[in-house]
Image (cartoon, rainbow, N blue to C red; front, side, top):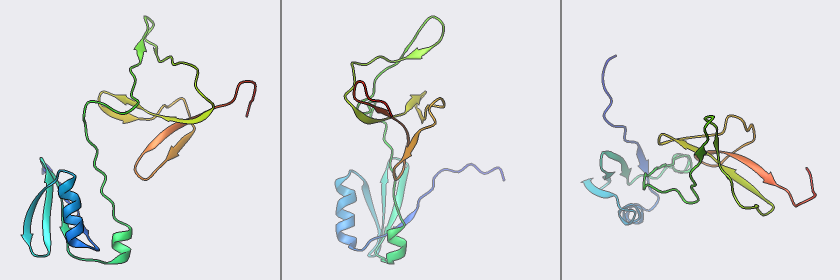
Length: 138
């Protein structure tokens, strides 16, 4: 098959259709009303269909993950490459805490292949490390 995909648009349901429509419009989606029971919500070429349909098991297992490129990621910091080609980052002393991180390389998010400790939330996988209190070891 040599067809070139141009879009993929999931169909999702809504327990409260009017409230859901308002929610997505407030997020900045353009609504295209297709019928009394269905709208297309889109941003640029990305979109999904919202239906006035409620099936609890379906709704409870549906999710929309929208990733935006706003040119800045909260807490993002640039690494520096030395003359040997080694990338590094230096920070002030960190407070004892569990920290997560990932790398963005050429616009793609990836984990650190040298750190086997990972955590996963709903839609992301991140590396994790723990900064112990001074003098404490785990």
